[in-house]
Image (cartoon, rainbow, N blue to C red; front, side):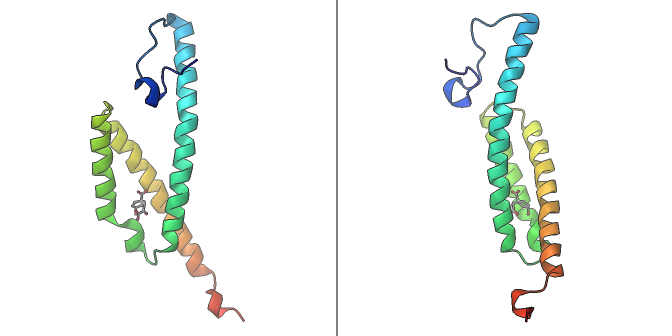
Length: 122
Ligand SMILES: O=C(O)C(=O)C[C@]1(C(=O)O)C=C[C@H](O)C=C1
């Protein structure tokens, strides 16, 4: 059976033979759980890419890169709008994500600074 909430299959339209009340809530929550699984899988991949990117940054200014943050948020706003999602929800979600990833990058940078450089080792 195809998943009616598969974004690629039916763009999130509800099934026509939808059940009512509690059964419908359970059905929709199951759809939310399946979507969360895919979203977190993708966020984990995105986080790995950001981790790799951090290896090439050497100071706090590069980590924070406010111009890039603005660019990402503008793009997310536009994508959300295009896909019928309230842009403020998407932007707030990404703001929180980027804030946490920035914290992660600053920790990576601090850890790298605290560790002796490979060439310093005897
Ligand atoms: O693009 C970068 O330089 C990132 O570190 C990635 C990212 C993001 O999550 O999109 C995270 C932190 C900010 O510095 C800007 C963007």
